[in-house]
Image 1 (cartoon, rainbow, N blue to C red):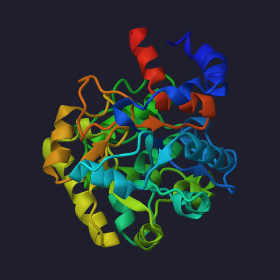
Image 2: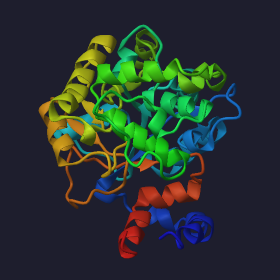
Image 3: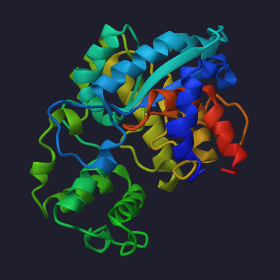
Length: 346
């Protein structure tokens, strides 16, 4: 697929999209879920292509919402909940819009666009958004801190007994991801203390000039998002790699985020999204823990799972990136892309 994908993206999928062929393919499982991670706010410039690749331009977001409304039955998250919990039927081409992480731009930039297009979204936020003081995603802050003074894995001052995985090898992104994996093995308190130690080694302020890009929602802002008619789900307390946490810590991340966010918005939190949400960062243990925590369903960040069986706690999603075209999005939502991947042995 590494060699076929550019041809599919730039030639095959656009032709299938223009001819309307993809409109005749029913969504796998009877529904589709599209997932965003926020938008690039207008006051953010000169960002890192690696980190910002998960965010879309606001105009692209508008175009994609308009496409989805024309070609799918975009449903409210509560309609999806009724299907999950009570078996109520969904439209033939049902589509749910979701967004992970709870960056400030989900309120300042995404919400007005969603309202103007009359689309509701299921927002998955971390426990940080149940508090009143501003915070960042720790792994994004770590990325910027490491880059600010060219820290490598050997200089990160992890607590005693913790080391980065192959810290000195690979490119910068590989070294950063090794540090994220090592940091995920710490409990939340230990990790916060470690990040504080790294933070004092440099002045990263120049990297965080756009508050709407980097800051997470606070509790009053989260309540505002909820009161606007959007639905709030949980995304753990601190967004670690769950598979690297102890079972006790992983369950606390999953369960306590539900408790804290319910308290923050005054409404039930029935849906969970696994951080990173792919087979390299979670597995059957995390699926079981999400069930035990009392959620009604849980979402992946990939379009298929190795078990091959439908399961309310391994719901697939199509992850939209900055470079996702409308034709490519249509091919993914139809299930055609996943079938081609399986056909090519991926």
